[in-house]
Image (tube, rainbow, N blue to C red; front, side, top):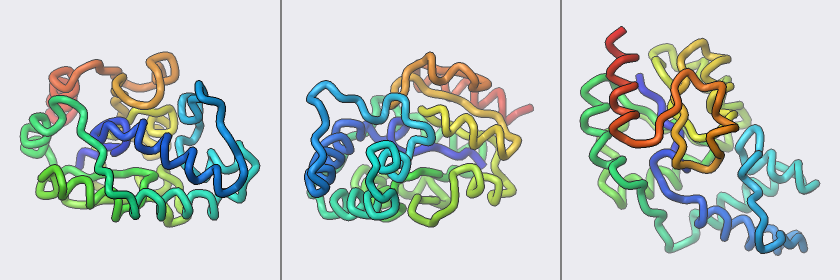
Length: 198
């Protein structure tokens, strides 16, 4: 099974979540500086961790973020070429999503863009389990694709390779521990073909 992170890998949702974050923080009388990039170095890259870092009760903060996102009429766009990659990737192995975002939000975005049929499962956040623990519970997992250091560490904990994409939320320097770092969807597909054939 090929496991994809969602935000920053499939969905170009950074600006969406940044708006949701600012609106949610306003509920707690917290204001981010205009130039703030709260997700750039977050480890793990979860809304619970952001709450901790901002000294807000993490579960409550993450729940408020999720509810605000699910109530939004905005649907994040996809990264270029990702929709073209998925049919080819699905021929290599079953596809799943493993994300800190809630499963319902992910399913809504997938359905809107017509991508839901490519994924056999969606493992969303909010369960209280870490991404690493969830990944370890997927016996068929072959590779984890992510855009954050926490995705790489989850793959390490599960004993599977990690592919990092550079078009997501964290920069190349943060992704150096991945087995492979890719800059484009064609490069990602090449890496998947190599890993799934070995």
